[in-house]
Length: 252
Image (cartoon, rainbow, N blue to C red; front, side, top):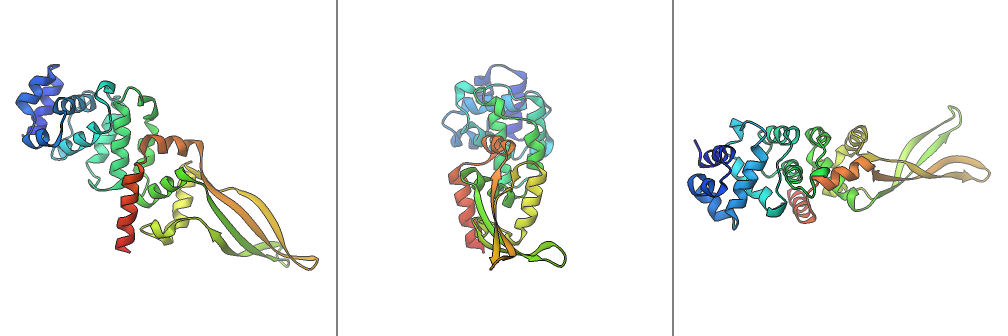
């Protein structure tokens, strides 16, 4: 059994975290942290409510080290079962370098921080399960500013409807997305999840003399209140996201 699993078993069975450190923590974990005892506490607090998930064993140490850097030692508290369990289950199937993984780790860090535990709503887990990396990037961008969009449509008088949508201006950073052509899918999905909204706040008729031939619409893509809470609990910080954006640009 790997050293980190021995560590967790000891942490679950004993309140003496110093003994856990001395007897069970792996050499790699000792070298990676300046506060090894606190890493043991993190392991205990995350896994205390649940059985250890076998497929997570070889990755658990890296997750613990990441979480330990996000929570002050004095703020550590037990993770709620309905948050820790589903997050760890999801981490079994996510890539270590994925922005989705980082979101799950952020949420788990909130769940064991007594000053931020109220931000760790269990509903965010299902939301994360349904997001793509590009959608997380869009949510991050929207956490900084609303995205302005201006478009026009022709008026078909015979059918009494507007058609031929043409976008004149868009602040949507499609060059920062891995699959920019999927923007409409992303918006539709994020809207269905209650994370974003795209209201038209102004419409101006396009005239040809005294006859209306079309319309110009001004709209904003913005986060809903739920979306703002989600950002606070889950979305990675500026440094992490900017690095991810640079990687996408290099790949394109």
